[in-house]
Length: 583
Image (tube, rainbow, N blue to C red; front, side):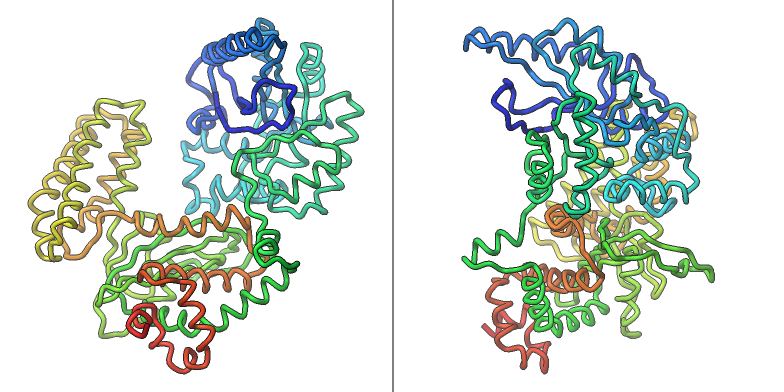
């Protein structure tokens, strides 16, 4: 069972954390979207569900005896797939368990068209694709799609040629809802559309909520609301409560921060969102000369960590952009925040972010475009996506071993013996790298150490994989086969740390740095305009770079604002590492 931490505000029920079920199956393997959802941990077998419900039933029974009460345990079923009907005979055995199905406003009106995500999963199953790894092929992936309004989701899928109404996927209809209510089920509300509703303004959603609430009550259903994806915030929750949804379910810790209210409380005065933005923009103007200086210095760096993550700009429109390494153009709409950590010759690090319709490869191109002709080829550490490769200047592309290792980790449950052996061997190269760090080996000594101790490991894994493929002891299109082919295809880039000085072993450093952007995305959810995104990138870049230099960022920003005239005239004197000396 998917034990998401759903909170429940009423005292009439025994549990405060509500178990949630999405898909149910009899036996494996599963077809269509159901198979993909199973790989994402969204399914449960009838046998296991029965065991868990029996445990819950016994637990609440014992609790009732101890407290001399007659409370029940609530179990929720989300999304309205037809396989929920398989649980009817089972649930009759547990009178102290109350099931509730949460469905959208469209489903309340009898619409049985699958969710756009379900259509994507069906397509992925038919084409043997991973829904989290579609950016290069489709221009979007599962995570990006979940952050779009449902109509935008359908438009993106339709443009990609994906069937929006796969016949294999069946949703509950009005007759099914009648059957459920006759079997003592509750029917609740799952939003006007199935997406992260935080991307909408409450006043724009409210008319739909009012219509759906009226229909829910007319049908005799229960005015309880489970937030799609579990995502909510204070403003949306208050809006839903004003409509009549006094009982709401959402993931614990997912409401985000109401920044305006937090700042008001901190300052003790009322302050509008526009005033907050104006002040942030003033800070950005004062620190921008330093940002520009950092950007210019980064162009001549010796090493770059490179990656990106999805984001959202509300007012961004699709743009026609040139296809890289081609004279053709393509309409682009995917918005990403690209991140770079540039290591300079003096070993200082510069962190830069850029949010727009573009991938990390385009960001590194904009940096390398200013690179001095006297500088040699830089080393770029990234994953193996073609969109990460620069076109402005030649570079040595070292590839992330964590990504390669993850290919094996993902299939360990299906191939435990083979994969456990590989992971054990593969893990030794990180042990070797940690030793080189602890001994503070020079780049030359580090390279020699890896050549002596890590290169044989990489070669062993390569030979092991080649033998499996050549002897056909592993199906090439199986999960393990794909992991092996990934390692073999990218072996040269993965093993560069054993053949060149200064090459890193993985891309974990920039992935960790991008969590700054991920946290901001969870809290703020989106940028409204490209200008707002750019201001955020400038401020965040300088904060991250200053933090890497180990200085007090608050004091640093105060100095940059107090001495803005000098900063503008001589930004090089106010770089974080020069600020330390100046202090």
